[in-house]
Amino acid sequence: MHTLLVLTSNKDRPAYLEHLRAAHLPDLEIVESATPAVDLVLGDPVLIRKVLPDLPALKWVQATWAGVEPLLDPALRRDYILTNARGVFGGLMSEYVFGYLLLRERKILQRLEAQQQSRWEPSLTGSLRGKAIGLLGVGSIGAHLAETAAHFGMHVHGYTRASETSPHVERYYHGQDLLAFAAGLDVLVCVLPNTSATRKIVDAPLLAALPPRAIFINAGRGSSVDENALLAALEQDRLAGAVLDVFEQEPLPPEHPLWHTKNLFITSHTAAPGFPRELVGLFVENYLTYFDGKALKYQVNFELGY
Image (cartoon, rainbow, N blue to C red; front, side):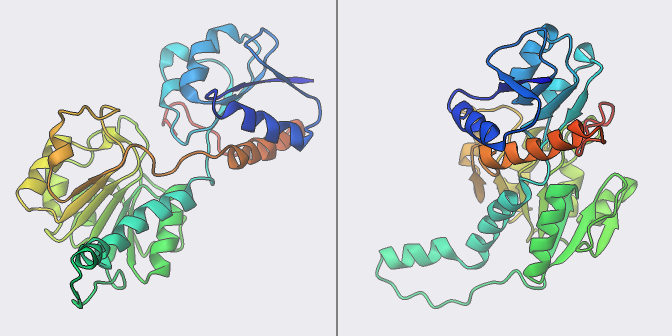
């Protein structure tokens, strides 16, 4: 018998419990609070971090986030398997990224403004077809973005630590090739995790390597971007625009200059929300694998951070 502790927001908890019970998983007891018998946890890494010391029998944690930074502190290191949420956010992230790209290319805001002014506005629209998009990170989310970009007829470039698994990426870059990767891009999208190797990877030299026509979108982690460098590039028209969903400090303080930076769209860490049905489905798939004694999917390497 396995004992599962579910740690999510109070708002989402009833939906998680409903979907879990509907799955009728074998030999699984769901408990309301941390006890010494708990060996499995499903939930929010911030909430899990708080109870780790109270779970001596812990064997496996299934995080409901793609990023698991709160659980990577060496001081918290325990002998358990950590899996993250993969394969559930790619579609949502594609909706976010390409929603904003189409907003710009199809001049949606300009058309709306013209409508409100009762003004005919027949200027030619832009198109994504033939443009070059660069993906900083081509894991499961990046691979989905690559597929969507290919659907729109874009040229897809990818920058990764080592892997080259997406068939929709035309050219991969690694290591010291970061500036070469940026040259010639029309769109740069960052979906990197927060690791020591990715912090402020989007810095002044990288932004300077982008053509002035380029759009930058960050839907990964705020730590990946030098916000001062980005602000300067936008204010000095060295970048055509940006969309930011994540920030070094969240919530973004009301006095932060990014709120009023030109050609910048700000969203509030809403690009790819986790829906209980999909996340429970991920847990169910992995639990049945675990129950059969097989290797779990989406295991996190504590050293690499993903």
